[in-house]
Amino acid sequence: MKRRLSDFIYIGLGISLLLALLLSPFASPSPDGLEKVAETKGFSEKGKSSTFWKHAPFSDYTLPWIRNQKVSAALSGLIGTLAIFFIALGIGRLIKRTPKKH
Amino acid sequence: MHIPDGFLSHGINAATFVVSAGACAYGVKRVNRTFGEREVPLMGVTAAFIFAAQMINFPVAGGTSGHFLGAVFSSVLLGPWASLLIMTIVLVVQCLGFADGGLTAIGSNIFNMGVIGALGGYGIFIFLYTLFQKSRKGFFTALAISSWFSIVMGASAAAVELAISGTSPLRVALPAMAGIHAMIGVGEAIITTAAVSLILKTRPDLVTTYRARQDRNKKEVAHEKTA
Image (cartoon, rainbow over the protein chains, first blue to last red):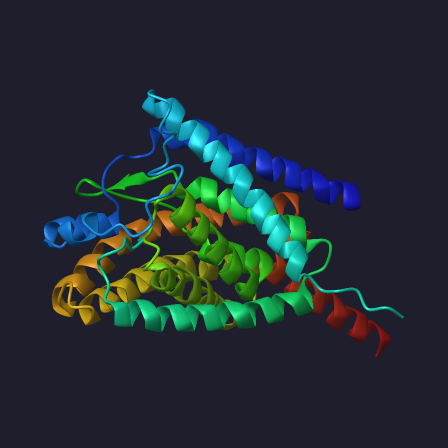
């Protein structure tokens, strides 16, 4: 059972990494629902001038040192997906049930 | 649906932050009671899948795009409180690492997509699933409807926050946000149903909500046999 669970984890992580690597470069570049509403209802300017956090290393899912947009999106997605996996794993480990001693 | 900095007032930012932080704190307590060795790697892989899938914007009508949220998806797999924590982890990483969603609006984004999307969406799922008498068909119908609602309700909450902040009046923002996200929600329903049915086919024991039902059925059968 234990082995089969880890199989599922590897396959699930593999699928996620493939999604990030192969499909994210071909994501629709159109504005999302909120951005579209902000554009048509005339309040999108409010967001552009007031970015509070300016130190995001992969701003807008790109690696600033890679010129090719598709490669840049794919690699930033790959890094993000792996990072999220380990962060969520670590947080899960911290907050999981502490085994009771008999 | 990720709200950037500058759209919301400080009051809304603070209020939603307090509610979201409180919900997360309670979520940690709940997850601490239920999570064992088994669930930890599942939390990691679910969060990774949601992050990757959220990058893939699909086109909807009128030059707009939308993407998968995954709030009901992770609720059905790991329970609503773990789902809230997963959404929070994804949103914080997107905000700090990818400048997707504003840091000042993080409380609102967690509120809209975690508290409303995951907890609210799961509430609708359980209500419908019970209403459909926990049949297999009822499971998928409840899944599709509740994941659609998770998107539309989250977007509507965002519209209310925009209105209270004085950014856009409610009669303008609410129909616009709910309208566009009613279309994006169809995508959410399709992806959620497809992904969960794939997992149910390969590893039914990993779908917590479905497993709970089967365990109960088994217990009832066992009980009838002994009686």
